[in-house]
Length: 80
Length: 410
Image (tube, rainbow over all chains, first blue to last red; front, side, top):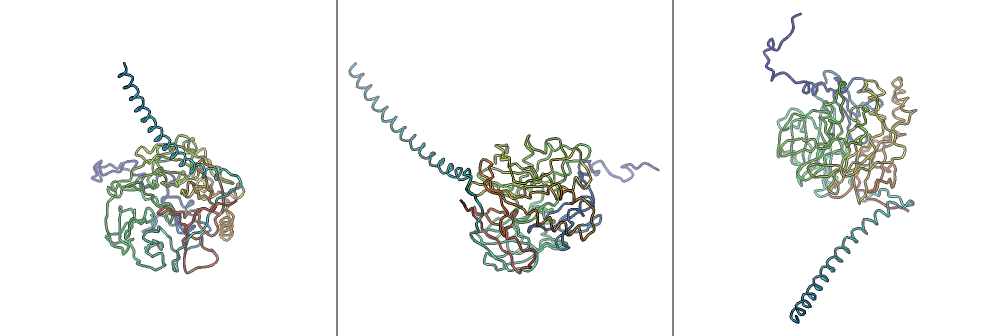
């Protein structure tokens, strides 16, 4: 397989994300592709870029109006 | 010689008058400070008397008739306005209501519109007699109570959208011309290869004029987060307040109040370890893990949710944390019905609590406030306001907010 290079994509080094910037996109620490939100005590709590296991665990036991989670193609949600 | 003595006598008399004047001023100053100290000592005496308890009393209330799931963001006793929002998965409707319960306006600033804040990064914050601000993914916005855009400043750096907490009691706190808030940008700085909690600065200062979000406070040297242990995401989410020209911070699950200077270096002034009754919290793992026993502690560990100061006392809202047996059960695989039952039981068993703490860190009282949501504490115009805890069994067509004071009980 041919090795990919920046030239093939006509990218300059300025167009390529640095490692820290990439972490911003993927979530870095405890990264994942899921988001969750739940309502408790009159406030909303939640997190973005978590694993599916974490999202499911955090909202277990909440009613459908009080908690949401989604993974991969979440589209526009109010929390992330 | 005689002249010399006369001059000396005259000088002595002048000197005596001057000394007397100085002594009078000194006595006045001493008397003034002794009065101040007396007031302070009187508060401390109250703190330290073992039979005296300090709890909450409801002073005033505001009722808003509303059907739905309102999330109160802010209120202002001066303009007598309550700002709340109906959050749904794909909509956000802001409502402005008066203390008389009258809805004044209702509109959305979320979604595809030119003056949208994007995704909300903090609770909405009332900033004047007819305006509020929104800290969103698209920048810093100010709107009128009718929903008209007043000002807009872009972020100086693209923010990381981590979403955390939205609701009354969790908002930004004013510090001179800045706003203190938690740092959502922190999380990406850690990774599995080189966790370094010393890099984290969980408290930021937001400048709505320049669009800058500047990290200002990291963990003090004695913090549990610098102990070499590993913690789940959000374990250090700060509860904070600005009081007496100080920034008071509790870093998530760590039961300590850290008090920082509000001057630009934001240096640590003192710390008050909190001896909260039955407080059970995650003290860190040996390594970062993707196991539920590690990340699941985000739901089961004790944590400080809110900190406010009123009449010389700190009020700490906290979740006490699961005991070992419930902790173990929370990680067990269960069918959906049992899972629902388990978490409902846990919600009843582990209520959020309030600890009232004196200026030396002594817990004066610890209780579950009757009919009030502990995490919702908000200080506005020197008044403490809290959200009424709704009855889970009865659906109401209104919600209430209470002004709360401290009650001394023998």
